[in-house]
Length: 324
Image 1 (cartoon, helix red, strand yellow):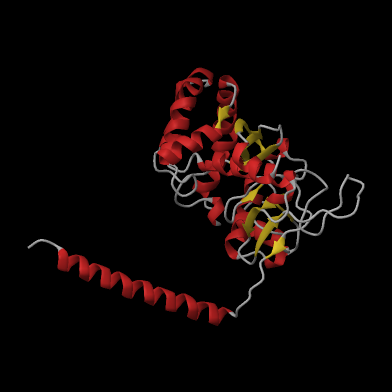
Image 2 (cartoon, one colour):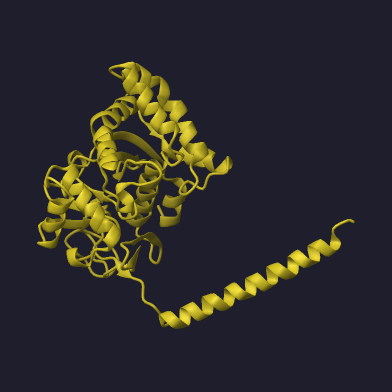
């Protein structure tokens, strides 16, 4: 199968919501995942550092944020890119062993995962770590995650690809707008949530959380996109970009490259193709800037002024044609 065919035909099902540490052996005590390409702990940007501090408190590795910050400053945490562990991260968010993640399975059997969405407003993925945020994460760990996992098991998994397709027809783009897809997911899981909940309050709280979060579907969509991108990457067709990620300092691409001499895994690839496993990046290719930053800004400013001038001309002409 070609990479383009894999992009077009791979389907993905959500099969569970489980603790990240139970899904991925790369995650452990003080060993967490982060979004974007590899980055040294000392180079982590402010929001990601805040998320690290909140994550340490959430995991019980620190009594408070001040202690967590000292642990980070002393280099007491190991961080690994989500993409190296078969996952897709969320903004500045950190994935720790007990955080619930959506587990997705592609039609070829390969699995990926993404952290369960916390909702709008202040959240760990934005670098916030207040008491309310940590309390919500604990509720997601203890109540929401297990109940969602039971509901998904009850229905035999959910076809995320079908939900994405229907969402697109209803106006979603399945990243920043997920209203229709989230509503459809709630509708599919609600009966099983009511049936599998230990008490009515747990079911009501989870359904209210899902219905009140227009981005609830986002974690499912991200995990699905990762699964489809990985399927295209495994097909090995040269030149196709199968992932893009950023960490606040740098942005990287993952693309297939031409196969060369034999390798113990069956093929040998150049620096851009992973051969060690189906979900690990052998190397993320940094985006190289061909222009200086001031030059890029000047070009962007010029383009913006041109668009504004064009818009004003269009508005004026439209007004001239308006009856009366």
